[in-house]
Image 1 (spheres, rainbow, N blue to C red):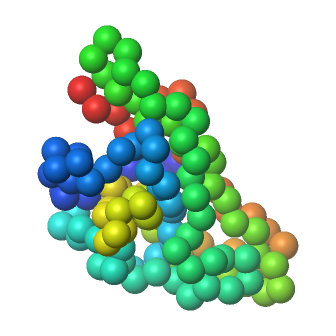
Image 2 (cartoon, rainbow, N blue to C red; image 1 turned 30 degrees about the vertical axis):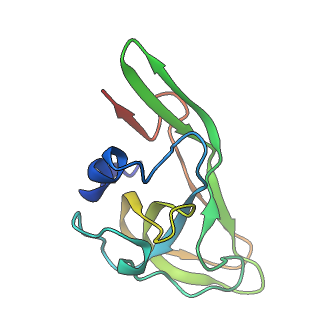
Length: 139
């Protein structure tokens, strides 16, 4: 399983009320260009081309729960997946979580799958978001 990497700006964006993790629309997009921790907004990310089952901007990651237990907030999001249809989806290696409600598409974090993923016609790729521990925790 790929591990979650936080963008540096996420912490500042939380403090400045850019993100409301319980109500904003969070999405995952795919990229074949390595994100860096200093990226801040969606336009900093080289998204793969839309087509064959992948829509520009990626797919929504709906909130399952965002709760605070004993001073620790845990963000749990629904799994996100794509199925190649009519041909292959463009090659990718990274899945990037961002806030599509924020006007600039402020970035939250990314997963590096360690190698290029080639999703051929009829096959599905799922970003397996942890349903127990959450995507992230805030303490």
